Image 1 (cartoon, helix red, strand yellow):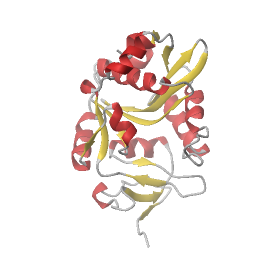
Image 2 (tube, one colour):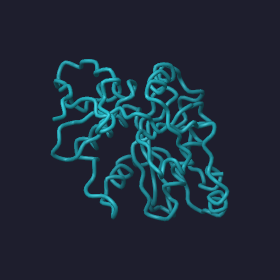
Image 3 (tube, one colour):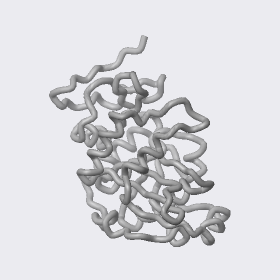
Length: 242
């Protein structure tokens, strides 16, 4: 039987130490609480994120190790750069956050259901309205064909999900985000859980203790350009993904 701490909805108490997270399933730390903006911001700063399916209690995770992109070393490979040079798509930041998160939540052939429940959607829309959550949208003419969204705290961006309705559209979104964040002075892009896909994009495993220690420092620092999302404007995929 799995035994984990159950958080009350109120008051907003600190999370258990991440060292208490289970080895199996990897990173399960606690359950309960709520998805208020205050609790979510506390969670991410602590190296914790919510992940649960419809009908389950809110589950909080801190896996060991963590999948991290070091932004100053995250670059597309030569094959993808050749594709990007001729790509006519355009890229926008925060043009339609709701559309991007809805596309990320849409059914996929390789997965049953979605973890982006109605409650999660509402929570991240609140974070977007507060200026913490951001999205990259890739457009073919005026049609949204790919994107990624996540949460920016200090000099760390916590990636949540991405989608692609065209081949390579999610990669354009990812590398556009990575380059934009690096130029703005961010240090890490968190990929949360290790996977082959993230490794091919350039993620590396980082020990949880080192990740949490880095968050304590980086989440307190402002990026070089705090208004990066507002300043982005409309840019071409080819200039961002190279």
